[in-house]
Image (cartoon, rainbow, N blue to C red; front, side, top):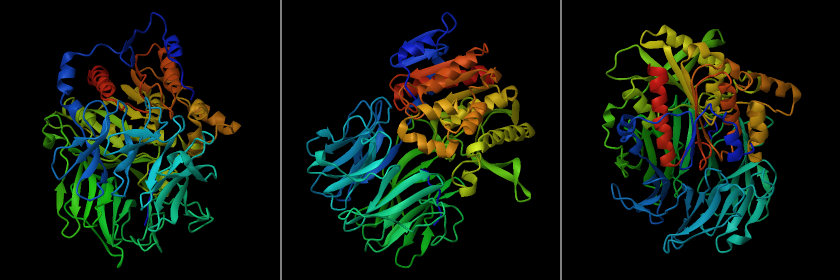
Length: 633
């Protein structure tokens, strides 16, 4: 099989206030939001967006122990919580009630232990703590230290213990610990080799584990771990740098199905294999394929190693695979551009599909939502003797006369991939504002092979920005677009791409929207949380090397901020551990020196992106007003 792994110092509020030039920028606070330069919203925007802001989706967490009902994650209120659905189409029953989102629920496989583990942080800090929830009593307790980062809980097949990663030893390395559920206070470190480790799967007899050491998107290594002897043995060692993906034990315990950068079983599929899930009986293996950004589902017979694509599944994304305990049904989440993520169950015998959850879409007629077209455009370099063609998804407005204004939506990562998911924001932009949305997969994106994902590493960083320049060239040649009205939007690394695009193509862009973006690679690498720095240095370069430091400084948007004269909307979470708040603070201050318009939105109870509905709603209103003022006029 073949697969690509998809996988700061926080400034105090007093310092944030000091960066606002007295008398020049109005600063307001609404709840946990700090607002600078953003006007009051017209009531018409709030009213029209009401339906779009009340869409929701469901994620699969687990079948119950008996295989009758399912546990899901969905939001009713401010944050996502765990709910139970007894049967297809049944009313969901909420299980957890917290002010912070609940993440990573893992249910005990022992039917006599009606419990599950979940993670939760505070204010988007991503210092996740593991908690135990008793389904019979509704009580819960924290099992970790309250300060380190923890996650990836994996129960043994017997359900008497679980393995997880934690940074509690030194705040940097992801060590692995095994915890006996009867004595959770006695968590035992089993892997303290340094670096980034996460558990893969227990062997059927719980005597061994598949563990993975992650280095980068192009380099990860599975190991076999003997629970009793603590012996750690690399799986299929090689001098080459290889990226392995998912791995599962064959149920007799003498073999492993895995994904990597080589083809063994799925020779005829020229795309990345993603999720893997094997039935408890070991006779069926389900896997997904990323076919040019579209999700496909396959079922493989482990005896014959023959596989076939499941027919009749709508175009979209498929994830969260989990077999029912009897192995005859497969639950998964299906997300399409026209429908939010919902849980479906596939009957393995006849491939009939049954929908289990029905997430609300605010009363909207989603059949009118736009399904994007996959397009390709020519960029600046060649593959062999032919021009390199870059993929992008194009959302075309309906019922609006061309030429259309354009919003270029750039994904993060940078090893992410733009794929056609349901997005209420995108659909509002296209349907209500009449703006065409083009979402490219510039070089460095995952899903297109190992060579493609490495094309923007290190000193090649700005070549991905050149891909945006060539997209602007392509837009200029298309009569259905208004090349004089183009804006860019992106989050995290996509936020860097927005800022870099604004410095390189300021005269060709109307405006930019930067969400938690990197403005200076040196300050970013020095201040992102310690457990992330080495991972990011592999991608961006090591700022401790003088030559690389000079290069990173030269290409950073902060160094070139004097070139940005067009309006900007910049959004940030105060507690962001990945891209620290200082990255947004310094670029806001620098752009304002140009006497340029900057709207700045800071959430004091968020981290890397907004997860609370109130905050997301305010951002959505600000985005629409910003686009109306600076792209549509």
